[in-house]
Amino acid sequence: MTIKLIASDMDGTFLASEDHYDQKHFAKVLAQLKEKGIRFVAASGRQLENLQELFAPMADYGLADQIDFVGSNGSVVATHGELLSAVYLTPKQIQTVLDWNTHNPQSNDNLIVLAGTRGTYVSNHATKEVQAMLSRFYPNVTQVEKLMEIDDQILGVGFIWPHEEVQKYVQEIRNLFGSEIHVTGSGFGSVDILPKDVNKANALELLQKHYGIKDDEVMVFGDNSNDLEMLKKYKQSYLMPNAAAFMHEEHDKEAVAPNVEAGVLKTIEEKVLD
Image (cartoon, rainbow, N blue to C red):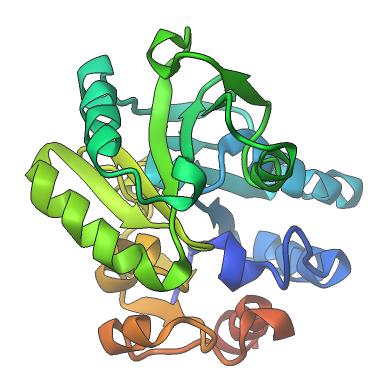
């Protein structure tokens, strides 16, 4: 098996908890991957800036240039030094989503999150606690009075629901909008509404074309429904043992350990570096 690119989701997959990962262990694995000419991709619902900050410590090991990024569930694709792609919702699509929410305000605290290229925007009623929580995943969280008057390009719109209700609302929104937009669960009770055909698998295709990498040279890791497209596309794809039950019904090949036990790194060491 020749692998040239390894992509991993972050929350619930690569990260043990919140923003934590074993930096020394990852640096050791990343150095070995570099020797073999294998790229590592952080593929997440988090925004690009957040991902770049998360892996900034790898610069201390001289390895920052070995990491590429798929942010906002595929809306943004970037190498270490180049933005390859950014796809945005249209004002009409955003307005349609907001109109739907006006008649269906069941999300937690009716919270709406607009992820833009320069910042993250929430309505004025968002509490400081909510803003602090969002800051874990989104950069530059700002309260605004009118969401449609934001002067920024919007990569996606997010809602927060109780975790057990996420799939119900994902399906409800899909049924309403059809193929006009892409809807996915993104962990921690969030539901992301993205431009049409935006997903991690399609984003990885752009990196494959950039580097000249075939599908059978790609390995991926994930734990949630926003990972399904890439888990289904690539033969070397691994679901985290800690994933929700519905994900195990969708995918049966598992990583060798859960996220809290560095399952991604251990699987790489066993399958690629051993």
